[in-house]
Every structure is written in structure tokens, then in C-alpha cells.
Length: 162
Ligand code: RP5
Image 1 (cartoon, helix red, strand yellow):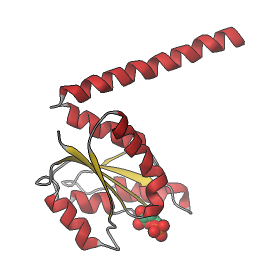
Image 2: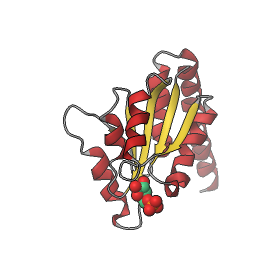
Image 3: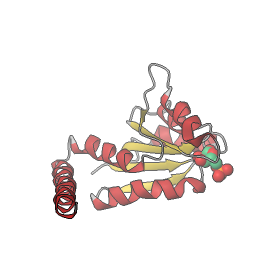
């Protein structure tokens, strides 16, 4: 099975990234986590992206805040699918990272999730790998069904309590 590469721009992004890790773990999808910065470690960021396919990755999550160029810098150096997580920073409520991640020039796509949307980033990777791995697609179907059942249970409780 292909791995998911998870790259964050700083260890300060870890509380957000942890949710992607937990989601991949719950689906038994192998992953590798790194701290590489488009600005502070541009060489390592590029090397990771250039070698990602040969190193067994099938999709990459890139999480960064502020001037969040990490996902774009990785996408520029691989044709693996790259999912960008714009992380909420100390100012501008993450709008800075959202725009920096999502506004890619034509030709170099980054699939951008919501600000701090780490769970969906992991689920998108699972869906991508699930195209060729039926076991992942089955787990995603089961998760959807379980999530729906939780909502319907809350609906029943609400009807009883109000
Ligand atoms: C970005 O700058 C990182 O992704 C992080 O979200 C933000 C701040 O980094 P630190 O100063 O906390 O290392 O590159």
C-alpha cells in the first residue's frame, strides 16, 4: 500500500496535523511525518517532493500557516496529489494561509481544504488511495455509515428531550 506523506512547516503546526495523523491511523493507512519548511529548509522540502513517488508515497499532505507556500512548493516538484492544509496563525485568522495555499497558478494544483481542515485532508488522501485499494474504500464506506448513524442517534435524542 502507498504511504501518505505529511509535511508541516513548523512543529507549531502539530496540534492541527495530529488530527490528520489520527484519521489515517484509524483507517490503517501508512504514513510518514516530517517538518520541512518552504522558507527555512527549501532544499529538504524540494528533495522530499522530488523523491516522494520513488519513496512509496501516493499522496502528500502539506500543512503550513502564515505565508503558507509549503503545499505549492511541494506540488511544484511532484505530480503526486498534494493536499494543502492552511493553518490558523496568530494574526489574520488563517485567511493569509488559506489564500497562500489555494491560489495556485494554473498547471500546479494543490487541493486545499478548510483552514485547520486536517481531518478532511486525511480523508481526501484515503479517497485517493482508495481508488486502487478496495480495503481503504471499504473502511471509508463504513466510516460514512457510522458517522451518519451518530447524527441520526442525536436526532432521536433531540426529539425525546425537547
Ligand atoms: C509557517 O509559519 C509554519 O507552517 C507555521 O504555521 C508558521 C509559524 O512557524 P513558527 O514560527 O511557529 O515556527 O511556516
